[in-house]
Amino acid sequence: MASLFRITFLGTGGSWPTPGRSMPSVLLQVDDIISLLDCGEGTQKQIMKSGVSFMKIKHVFLSHLHGDHFLGLIGLVQSMSFNGRTDELNIYGPPGCISILSRAINVGYYTLRFPIRVHELSFESSMEIDGFMIHAMRADHPVPAVSYRIMEKDLVKIDPEKAKKLGISSRRLEELRRKGSIDHDGKIISLPDVYGGTRKGRTLIYSGDTRPNPKMVEFAKDADVFIHETSTSSALEPKVNEFGHSSSRQAAEIARDANVKKFYLYHYSPRIENTQELLSEAKNIFQESCLSIEGLSVEVEKGNIVIEKNL
Image (cartoon, rainbow, N blue to C red; front, top):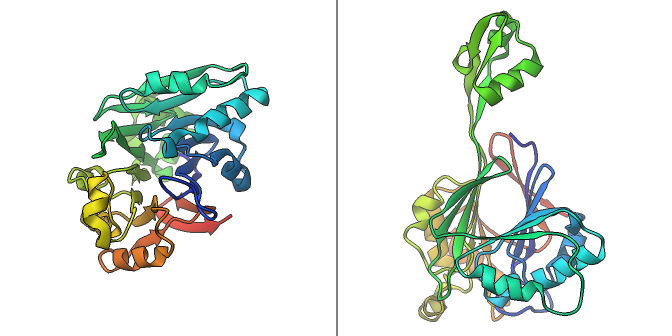
């Protein structure tokens, strides 16, 4: 199980940038594995402010291909190439992303010096990446779009007293955890022989752009961190729903029904100047509602305790 599980908000706006708000992007760092959730305009500058090297990004998960969610990827890829990157970059997105991204990545005159692998996800798909389970669910948006559930696997804890009685070294315990059983002095030892309980893995939900989706309640069930778009307050619900978005009230109801630990409002319309109005509306429904703020880091520590840290 990873020791560091950190989420950093790079951009929290939507549609177009404003002086105090960048386009959507969230950085997820799990030990030394660094990923982006969406990559809107200005993302690479925001990454530099975070103190994380953009050269170390391994995965980019795109919710959909509206410009405010992926146009920053063009500049990011070119900067990586200018700075001598050779490691492969993996990009994931909804149906149709291969065609669009293939054209976008080749915009302008430059030499791409590292491999890029674009993975087109089917709706309701699941995969394992770097020891994590990634689940995609179709979002309710006018273009092909997905919401992501990123799950750390549960960890089987080992009872040190049981292991000590059996004379198993710490090195062999890791082998036992990995394989499920080992031959120890001619005797087969399996995990149940040293079982000391289970540590629940940590979970992040990222909705991307979506109308209220009834499937989201089950998809986000018991998540540690729930990032759901809240483009406007409930006063503009008919209009915001018409364009495939959610209000703060609607997203908070999903957070409450899904029993998440922390809900972060996200993807504010550029017409929204006072996000406190959205937060107040959400808190009236779900007390553990929080504003996403650019530069805010959230760490889910062992024991699934959510801690906020401003960079």
